[in-house]
Amino acid sequence: MKIVIGIAAAGFLGAIARYGIGAIPLGEGAEPFPWATLFINMSGSFLLGWLTGALTRGKVSPAIAEVAGTGFLGAYTTFSAFNGQLWQLLEQDAYGLAAVYVLLSGVGGWWLASIGLSKGRGVQRG
Amino acid sequence: MSQFGIACLVGVGGAIGALARYGASRVVATKKKPGFYATLTVNLIGSFLMGLLIGWHVESDHAAVYAFVGTGVLGGLTTYSTLNVQKASMLRSGVRRMLFRYIAATYVLGFGLTALGVAIGDMMRT
Image (cartoon, rainbow over all chains, first blue to last red; front, side, top):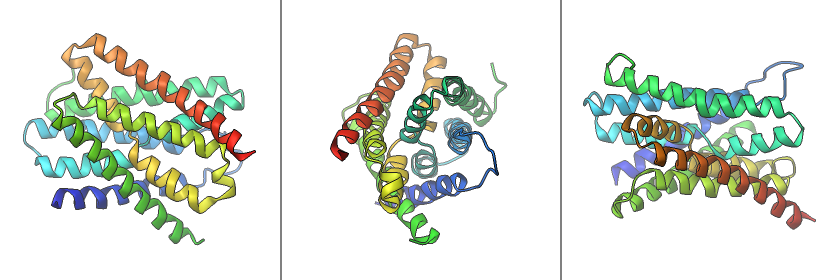
């Protein structure tokens, strides 16, 4: 039961953190590019990689990993907004930006998750 | 509604979404299936529902509803960090075919369901 309350509380904070970053103004003339979601998904991927790696060598407890990983980082990052923004970029015929968005989120985030895993495990990346 | 009120709606929605995602992961674990089944399921459902909200113009017409359902519940339900860490783990385990299928299912079906949701939402609005 404790874990359920922990995940709910962490999910609450993760979603608010995502909302807060999304509300940061980027200034006049900023490109219509979903920078906030990109930053969130890439940073969240790195942090979850690190947490998962740290869990495998017992540096964090399974309960902490579940609350911080499934609760906070799971709610912080989002796949539904990613697809929604991708649809909006394509609707505006911004094909180049859409491709950049997919590659940075899907390949860049993947790479960051992999680096995070290695760092969490405390091994050289290889 | 105030910025604080909106943030609270996002947080409560995020907690609900995170709990639903945790529930899905528990169901999959109980059935002894790989964890990515749960991630794929919540990401696809969330992407479809996000499409509905976009097609329905919920963000511009009903900001509070969008904050709760879209940014909160769907943002909390879906996840990109787990997706990227799973991709990194699968690559390391050498399960290339499963990795390829997972990536194809996630991105092709995810975006397709968002587009379908937009089309249905648009029809429901008019």
